[in-house]
Amino acid sequence: MSDLIRTTRTDGLLNITLNRPDRLNAFTAAMLEEFNEILATAARDEEIRALLLTGTGRGFCAGQDLNDRAVAPGSAAPDLGESLDKRYNPAVRLMRTMPKPVVVAVNGVAAGAGANLALAGDLVYAARSARFIQSFARIGLIPDSGGTYFLPRRVGMARAFGLALLGEPLSAEQAAGWGLIWDVVDDDQLAGVATAVARKLAAGPTGGFARIKQALDASTSNTLDMQLDLERDLQRAAGRSNDYAEGVAAFLAKREAVFKGE
Ligand code: T3D
Image (cartoon, rainbow, N blue to C red; front, side, top):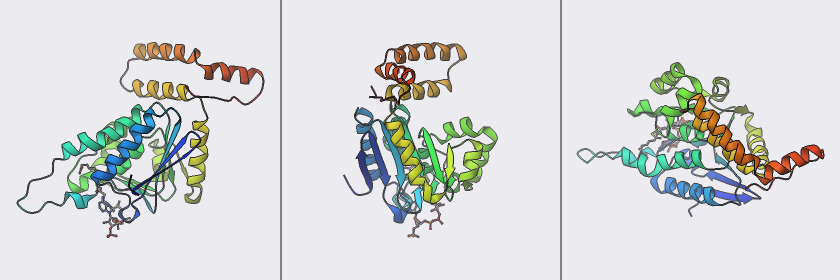
């Protein structure tokens, strides 16, 4: 593993920190492959019960490193479809299908795929000074890494068009106000707030969280009937879990529940 992504584990929490601050944590191919490997391992590891993703320096992530995309006159254009297929799309899929909560602490500017990878998290906090920029149109591209999926669903079509076509910075406060992210906190509070929440989730009913994630994600394409059936099935499984038994026992005994995760 390189130093471009740092990971630390505390109890059930895996901290992932993008660490290329002089390039605002823009992704090279190797760095993104490493990121995917970390996500895939975390998804399988039952000891890891929550993830916290952030960046070092004044940026969260500026998306693809454009130094890798400079095309010399007369040479073949890069295959961006292959880049998405091999690296960006797997990252988004891993974040969305991972059966555990992914908290994202957007510490600074999040641009291009960096903005949309942040939106692939389950609970997104941003520092007050952070900005979200769908910068793709500025270089002739379309929002990728799930941008055209997440944006209309979170902020509606009118705002999705504005963000995608204009590529202008959206402040963290506006992002929270529009429902693009969960919350905005003062810069010096971000790490503390996000870590406290991520630790709490890492000590929670992991199986229940996984079912919440599955149900909410499925709701974007399900009919009401399909969703009611899915809720029935997931609740049936949840009702058979040790964490549910512990939650009820703790409530009745008026004590804190001790969830083991599943
Ligand atoms: O290609 C594929 O595989 C397909 C997938 C594409 C996904 C994508 O993400 S496409 C979009 C790529 N990202 C961008 O277009 C964003 C480019 N960056 C910016 O527009 C600006 O840097 C920001 C708005 C994010 C921040 O602006 P500012 O003024 O706060 O900082 P800066 O001075 O522009 O950046 C600081 C340094 O980081 C600077 O280097 P320097 O001058 O100090 O040597 C800048 O060049 C570098 N940097 C920032 N973003 C990137 C980058 N270097 C390479 N690639 C970047 N994406």
